[in-house]
Length: 225
Image (cartoon, rainbow, N blue to C red):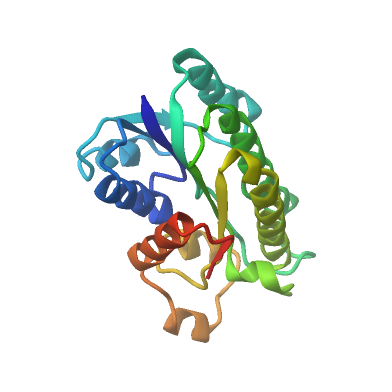
């Protein structure tokens, strides 16, 4: 069984990735969709014409991640695509943001991404692809968005190094680094602060971002901007 594993699949670029991979790759037998909101995962099934195995999980919790790992071990699928699109950010200065929000960004953006990648890798054959959603924030520290930018710098560095490590296995890793994208991400981010007007004016379409990310991944590019 050939599958795509997609985290953050209940909305935004995770959902767009599920649709894009289904549209472009007829060889997939299933999509394994991971997200916190079960109702959104069920709606995803209406947008793709292959079976969707739904995992309503909070990836910041180790016990939830174990449920995904157990299913991988039980069914032993061939994971042709891994898309780590789960993530969140909160706007605000370090001294103002609650500790829970700051550590939560690290748990989801860094810890969960690393854990899912590690558990999926044993099931990836040659010529598989990994797309790790970082951000243009990965390239430069951002006061007022410090923890989020730092977490995405981790994703970029980790992904580039992993791409080199996996060359002998012919598994290709692409760090996806878009600027502001018109998704629910900013609805959450702005619960603690306001994004600059210029970011609102240049927001990209999530479908176009994902389409380019998939093209760059197939071309073997290490970074997709």
